[in-house]
Length: 492
Image 1: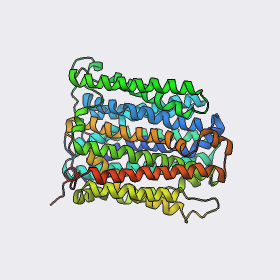
Image 2: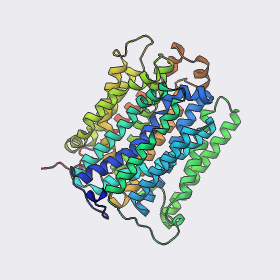
Image 3: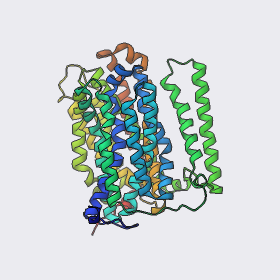
Image 4: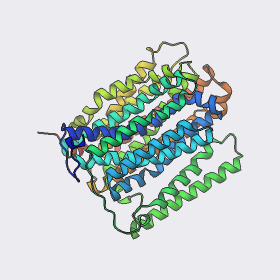
């Protein structure tokens, strides 16, 4: 019965109330689905390759097609939430995610799977920023810190548990990789039902003018095309002529330059308001937190991607064993993430976002040193535990710090920017770091399984660890003592 949780207009919820718990559950389900589907493909990649063909390049396209549209359009999703209502856009995004998940699960060819994944990224771009914006607008003070901490940690659990669930599904049937996507459908239904029951209906700012004059759709299209043309050719760098790669990348760069001019002009005309609200970057904590986000999330995204593949194709784990290997990350995040907000309130962002990436980097070095025939308990288990401890110091604090000085009216746009830089960081890292480490598509396809493929993997993981450590160093240098504490005031 929905009467037990009455649907009101906008309002503030109290932490611990039934309606607050249902609202938090709905937002975690929605955003968690998006994070789940960003991590689950790696464990299913050998079966996708065997079923649809295309080798490592197919896996990269399936992963990066999703990250491309999610990263480029998440800003539009945040703006739409501010304009027509956060709850409405969240529910639309969740429903579209369900439809596109069915498209992925039923795709008969690699090309159609990539297209379906890009559609799935568009849907995720609607529900991820609005899920966080709902919490930012619904809770205040210490309750907001607890809600964001729980959202960040438990949504992150979806990312960590994704490979395990995916491996279980892949190993149970020849077409198990399809169930990796189809399993989303009941969770989609649950998220929609809970959102309609419990999430307050924060009204938007829409006027009677056409929506194209109020939301920067053109900016979003330029971002998708620009990033796609700039980074996509790097996936095909061994199959395309050098001139074609250079030409496509030049077109992508030109479109991104055009995007910069469009956004600058719209900052003046406000018709529509720019997709990227440049005035937010005048807030020092917002700017620094987003730079740290792109560096750290880029390195952790490529680490998850590479470890899952290396365990299967380099070490010989089954899909379910490779997925289960990361369960310690799930346990650590689920146990300690909700406490990160309170620690942030006491010591601020600087120590947490310095220590966290450094610990993560140590875990990456350990995971990059795995050997065939070695016991899981020697390096894989402790590597994941160390990595997860670092994540606890990063995930919730960097999000809370990015939004600390942002008002509720712009929370959707601000959370969109924070999510965009995280996804784009992952997109860039998954393409560039394996290339820099010598782990190319042709090498992976030629070597198959065994020790040989681990050479490029180890180098790539060392690069990822170095990038992650640089994020911690940046936090140490750029943050000031006490930054981020305003986001989570200590309860007296």
